[in-house]
Length: 292
Ligand code: AMP
Ligand code: FE
Ligand code: ZN
Image (cartoon, rainbow, N blue to C red; front, side, top):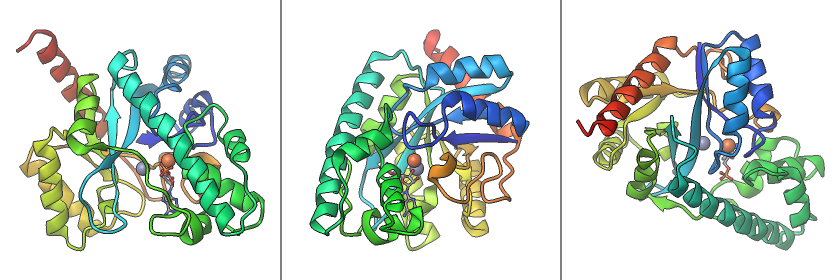
């Protein structure tokens, strides 16, 4: 079993990269990827812990993409096997993180306007050194008893379309995909169902549009994705030579009901998924190196 979408406290997860690797070891996982939002700052610690505990660790990142979508839809792009030394990648991620901070301040302002007593410095404290995300704000609302679950923070206040939501600054799809590929990574569309298309055909058409921009693969194993969607994406991946990935989107205690590896209990991502991704990445790397 593997898990290729995991968040640490370098973004909005609650565990350190070392704790994540330790947990993966206890669960006997074959491979894991750290995919923090807009940051690779946790990767050195993650890779080092991987060596220490004898787990295959993949350096990754997750970025949000600006594209045309139905209401309340999202495109998140995972970069797997990115080169964290790549200067351009780091500069672009710095830019996105700075804008996350500005956005969080705007969300606090909106919450204040709704009569909620929350300050920006509380959000900064909650996020610590990490890339600031909505789960940090959700946690404060829960602690202060404005909501009874993290999920209800999103439903009432900070989910897309709710009164305290503020959009992030994002790159368009071609730029987002390219920045991952320029740093040597594979661009994988995360949880395709959250694009929120009304029909499977619409969703599949969008995937092909993203493939034309350089998309390498799809996250097909994900908690709660319906059998119908999984089947349709699997067929599409086979027909169009797209890679397959999978992850739980584990955020520790910052996301209720999700366990590493097993998601909501029934996720079971085969080791072969990791091996196929790694093989593709290695052959692409060789091609680039020798300009084949
Ligand atoms: P952000 O990148 O700041 O927009 O926050 C995104 C994170 O918030 C995701 O990775 C999820 O963990 C969480 N999230 C987003 N939307 C929801 C939602 N409707 N319900 C619960 N969690 C959500
Ligand atoms: Fe997250
Ligand atoms: Zn996501």
